[in-house]
Image 1 (cartoon, rainbow over the protein chains, first blue to last red):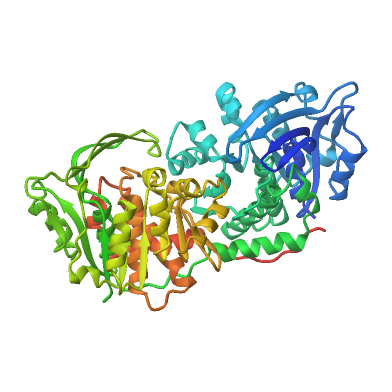
Image 2: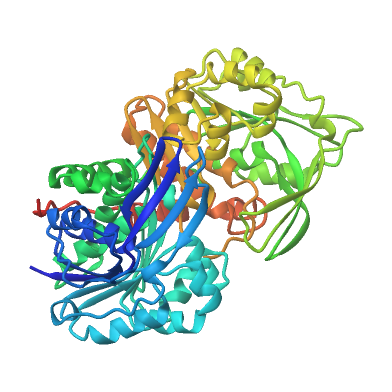
Amino acid sequence: MSKVTVVGSIAFDAVETHAGKRDRLLGGSAVHFSLSSSFFADTHVVGPVGDDFGEAEFDVLHARGVNTDDIERVDGGKTFFWAGRYERDVNVRHTLQTDLNVFEAFEPKLSEASSSADVLFLANIQPDLQIAVREQCTDARFTAMDSMNLWIDIARDDLVRAIGLVDCVILNDGEVRQLTDEPNLVRAAQQVLDMGPRVVVAKQGEFGAAMFTREGFFALPAYPTPDVVDPTGAGDSFAGGFVGYVAAHADELDDATLRRAMAYGTALASFNVEAFGSERVQTVTPEEISGRVAELEHITRFEDVPIPLRA
Amino acid sequence: MSKVTVVGSIAFDAVETHAGKRDRLLGGSAVHFSLSSSFFADTHVVGPVGDDFGEAEFDVLHARGVNTDDIERVDGGKTFFWAGRYERDVNVRHTLQTDLNVFEAFEPKLSEASSSADVLFLANIQPDLQIAVREQCTDARFTAMDSMNLWIDIARDDLVRAIGLVDCVILNDGEVRQLTDEPNLVRAAQQVLDMGPRVVVAKQGEFGAAMFTREGFFALPAYPTPDVVDPTGAGDSFAGGFVGYVAAHADELDDATLRRAMAYGTALASFNVEAFGSERVQTVTPEEISGRVAELEHITRFEDVPIPLRA
């Protein structure tokens, strides 16, 4: 069984959407990622929490078999807290509050069990910390990372250096454009490939995701769900499905495998948005995931039948 | 050979993009549509022009075999003129000037040759004119229409009535949402289906297009071109490819045919954006179109190989 290590935030989220309001959801990039990844591989999560992170929260991760030995509990500290409100159009989000708390001084410490992972995912944290973690995981056969606009703004050099150390970058399409100052996504992604990675995935929210490699291009629309309750964490659930699938097939990492990884990432993201926080991914079954991947194949496939065209 | 009639604008466009500037491009929805449609079916174009529309412009249409008998030349009038500027990010467009000219008083007059078409496309014109044309084309086996935010704002009732009279609606995704006041595209498209048509296509610009029918859903990303010169007319070229393909297969209008129609529409739209105005579609070859459809099939296909997931 492959082993995946994810380093990132563990959080409590307060979220308000057209579908209702929740004051304290288990969230954070490492949580959303690891719940998704747990369907495919042994998953170790590395991140800090405060005293307020209790048995109920650990139970959620343990129920999916996630290894929490490297969750660092900071005595007297409080867990990262984020509050946000989505408009009726859930593509429009307003951040109401961000309390970094214990995440502010986080310095990832990986046990031997975590640093020996086959596959590593560096969720959205400071690029210099991503580099430090990447350098500890010398055995990793596949490494991937996320980032955000903040680091493009204030730590671009470190970010580019981190990108040069991983196999795969998973960003929002707007971040790919911002990082390269190139509005055309195809050209922008090519520039990110030139920084070193062999795979660039541009997440496009409700429109799906596109994958760029040196060999070619693949794109998959999002699953067309009519019931978007809360999009928080969808990108991390996507990454968990994508990277988890890759981890389960790390010895056969060809184009066909990466395309299937995109489908599993898309399926997990679609479940993520159908309930608050990580609630839906906590309860989704392997059969439901497989069923949705099969549906994705169906709703994207056409058979080209060449016809005579008029010259 | 199937016959397609398109009713819409014929225009001169002045366009400025990152790639350069042109003062007088042959454009308009009916022109972009008919050039694309001409690869699939006999295409009749109905629309008004002024004295300034000359042999050179007719020659462009005739070179693709488009029937121009119902282009109405208004003595002393001027052809519809539009000027616009695209930012470096071509998704951001600024309209600089719109002179309706002869288009303002346009009342479509269809000859017997045009009104007897098998397939009808009502490009973006006033909804009451769309209704009048629709009612003249009693033989049409397949009818489709476009519209725009202006008509949703000032003539919504007529627009809904027009939608109730056609088989297929082709709109931008933002227009589908605006028309129904529903931010979720899946729900919004369902509401448009409830108005009467059997097919709703939501164009999503650089992200591709999605198709909703009573039976299901299909989505196709845009062709990933690094060379977007001028997006003007891409939506109409898409419609021309989609409706043209349907016209060539009007007796076998099943889901597989509609999916292929989406691919041909997507291919034509991708050529449209690679040069100013309709210049690229004027010169594209049948082989290039077929090749791009084959590429689209390749870049969107994945094979689902069920794997054991961890419960």
